[in-house]
Image 1 (tube, helix red, strand yellow):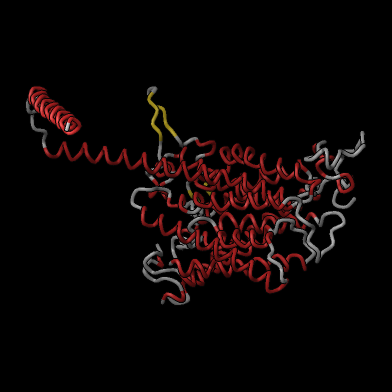
Image 2 (cartoon, helix red, strand yellow; image 1 turned 90 degrees about the vertical axis):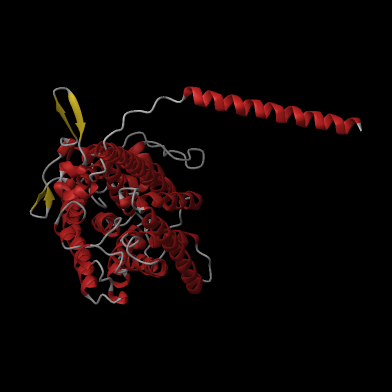
Length: 501
């Protein structure tokens, strides 16, 4: 009985306290209510609201593009680990340094030259001619700084007036760094380090930005409604074709037996690198909306298609290898996932999920045959860069002309769609012509670049590196000194001698 009375007393005390607080709060609110303000004209309210909403939109879009740009930049880590895992042990330090310095060098060269070539005011549909050193990024008048949008700097890009030049530059720089990093994988273990710096600088300044301008910067392919949402052509085909040409000019690694792939140095590195790349692709593709506001549903579709393409590519390649070898092959499964990602990158915003699965699966099969085709040509590509990025980049670009959904296509092909979506052969032909044009132009530019480097003996490292390893020769260090000690060579002639000399 005592216990029940005590509970009742507590309940009554709590109820009384709640009533007092409620009454006190109501009195305070009545006392603190300010007198009614003068009415603001309706047109002034509308103007202020529009201005505030626009500021919020810019903030959201800027945050989205920067966040996804950070993810794309993090892909440099994935490329470094993937390449380090697939090359032989005595070339790992060289691979890591090349991947790392590519980002630093590209940042400076793309800022000074490449961004202007890619996104400057158009000249003849071929090249940009302004905004070098980001000179149009801001204006200073009477000490007041105004940050210009990319639309202010280039009227052809007025659709992206929500982004400042600075924000847009960072996102595009991360893409540019990816293109040159693709190339280093195919040329691993035997490239003169100075030569690597030179070709990386040239890619950042000209060979990559020119193609960017054609497609995304107001050039002739963009004007022709050529579709490449996130870079199957612009980034991956350019990187893959450049890699193939570079590997051909270089010649194979020492003691390379074609038909027998050298064993990977560390499949753990390769797996972790691939998983980081897949993660980074969620910045690569969704970030290419270049804004969040108004694109939330499209972003969801892009994310789904990206995921399905990667999964389909991995499974298709894994099962193909099992049928051909009776083994569950990790290396080709990893490359299959990357092939699916590359394949779906161009059309992730233009196709339905079922089509993304088909595109990814075909890419997963294609990468196996492309890698073996390159091998049959006796071109040494240690990481399968052309198979993953070149062949599957071309496939993904053409696939838009086959599977493009009418309601998702833009420009001249808006509402028309691809071949299997009732749009006829028109968009397919446009995609084939665009892709072929980029392949030819890239091959020519890469041929000139690597041909000159080879002529001045700055393409292939000295033949002494074939004996002692490029890590020891170029960098004087071993990744695992307790397992692979440094050679006991104290004096080495560092004069380049050309391929195989």
